[in-house]
Amino acid sequence: MDSGEKNKYGLLGRDISYSFSENYFKEKFIRERRSDCSYQNFDLKNISELSDIMTQKDLKGLNVTIPYKEEVLGFLDDVDPIAKEIGAVNTIKFTAQGTVGYNTDLIGFKNSFSPLLDKNHKKALILGTGGASKAIAYALKELQIKATYVSRNPTKDQLSYAALDQAVMEEHQIIINCSPVGTFPNTHEKPNLPYEHIHAQYIVYDLVYNPETSALLAMAKSKGAQIKNGYDMLVGQAEGSWQIWNEA
Image (cartoon, rainbow, N blue to C red):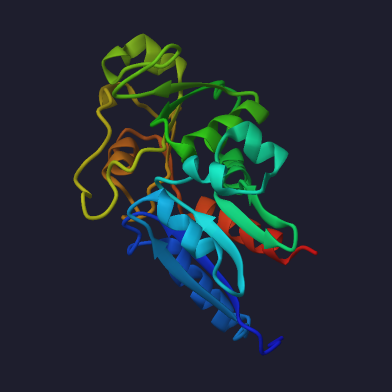
């Protein structure tokens, strides 16, 4: 129903002209006849620019993407306990009491990933250590799957790509790419994995959604693995955000 009042929503990130969210919400508002709502990208070179955006009139909610999911916490009045535990926020709600941060990546990932699981899927490798990876690790813990981070610059309890030998790969039959490697326009790129060890028992999940089949997923598919891109997760987190923004 059109209230006649503009409710502004948007996406915070850097270099986000390619973003899923703006098109998704604009189409949603047309489909649901919500002419009272608008959605725009806020492409920030630096998180310090956020203060000016937060004071905009009629702003009701924001999504947050790379690279600000962790940095944004310091700008919020309150953070939902789960988002606080994850250590990353992808949804901001504007209330009379101030701004509140949430994480809907968790539910978006969990709902799209869980149907793929089988009894052999006990351990996972998470490629990348940014804000999105934290929600993935939290979801895996809830699903009782032990996760290990893989990084180009590993810290304690993380693995380097060079450490991914046959034994490590065989032990971890879930691979989740949380890095931007392979995203348009660099579609030929893929994580530096020993692909010869991937087989039909694997799940390979790539948060990249553009292209639909990344170089990582194409290679994994050729080895017989179950593959899934990040599109359903994105839809899930977007709808999760919309629900939060519209709760009383």
